[in-house]
Image 1 (cartoon, rainbow, N blue to C red):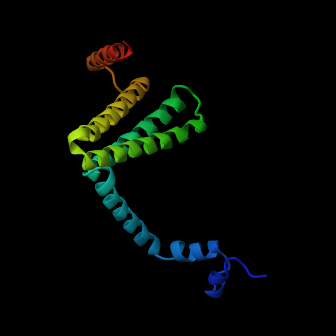
Image 2 (image 1 turned 90 degrees about the vertical axis):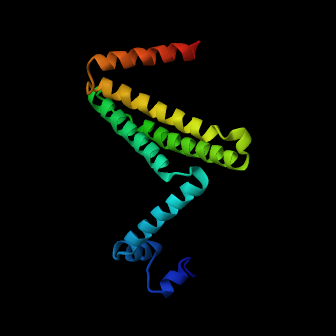
Image 3 (image 1 turned 180 degrees about the horizontal axis):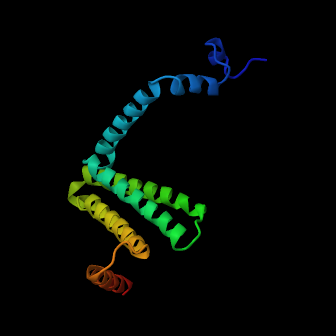
Length: 164
């Protein structure tokens, strides 16, 4: 009976895992592939998601900081960490990137109707992440003082206006 990996076997590999291990882990090809994929990702972002890839990298950084402060808050303040909430972070990234992709392309093909949409969504996503990071840092007692009370009052006013 022929194996499904007859091409790999004819090249001298026992399995796909053996092939993968030899190609990526025993050579410096993995570094080259990683650099190539990062470049391709940057080009994809500039063409289809946002014209400035650094803005998307900044948004991803804010998402990562939010994740780190959220996990820290769960461990030190709530004294428990529930790992089933981690996929939500992936879902947030997926939904942010999908909405930015759609908004960017809608604005590219019909700028007179949708030119405001990508910038508006980007600002909304950044504001959401900044507020979440702010709340996590306050819960961790990293930020104290008069500025905190003033900004908290501002957030409360904004929350009251959005609830009306």
